[in-house]
Image (cartoon, rainbow, N blue to C red):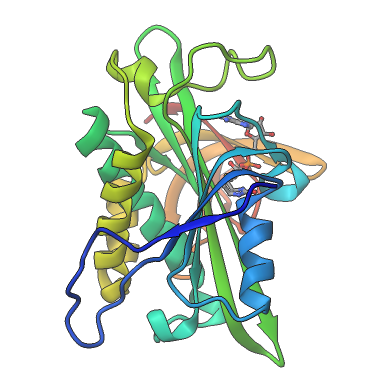
Length: 270
Ligand code: BT5
């Protein structure tokens, strides 16, 4: 692995007292996983707010043991370390707000930098809609928490966004897209990173409206969905998101099911 280089955050240089500030930014040419790197750094005492960005991951982590794949320079690959002091109202039960806030901040950052508004998909994806091929995955998020003695020690929010990529491997060619493909021009990972960090800092300072903003903007709601759980799949209408972040789905039989973890496929709006 190359030596990391740390740069102070260019954004939000004069935060008010009590206001959170993200940074420094540790830049790595190559790492197995920015989440793994930052979780280990957190155990060794790394400060809250530290951001890790890599040009390439050899073992990028997805949810449920899956992987995040991207060639060198194609995805913005980043993780943010948050300790409770940066967002004091966060508890083990409300960590999902940090991921929802990251999704909102990244959707706005993509719109500012690439000129299109991604669709938020439960639990933590951004999709880009293409009139010819439908919705494709632009961004995935993986939040990992460290808990000891029943207390939340730290949270690492990991985000992968396809920024500048045209030649997808066979396994992603029908499901993934990238900012440059949707906007039709080159997009800078650094610009997207800075726009994201500015917005995320603001949301972290006031998480009160995150859940309602997320509900309002979640493309999954009022959509016919297929829910894929371990060993089971069913269809229904996504009707709501509970305060603890679960997805409420009305099945075709009329029951309301609460999904805490699983995969969702957007079928069509209702
Ligand atoms: C996710 O998991 O979408 C979470 C991805 C988080 C990646 C970031 S990168 C920086 C940070 N450090 C890490 O180690 N991870 C985080 P999931 O919902 O399980 O989706 C994974 C699935 O998405 C894979 O099984 C593939 O089908 C697909 N996939 C993999 N790479 C992709 C890509 N670049 N673009 C679109 N889809 C991809």
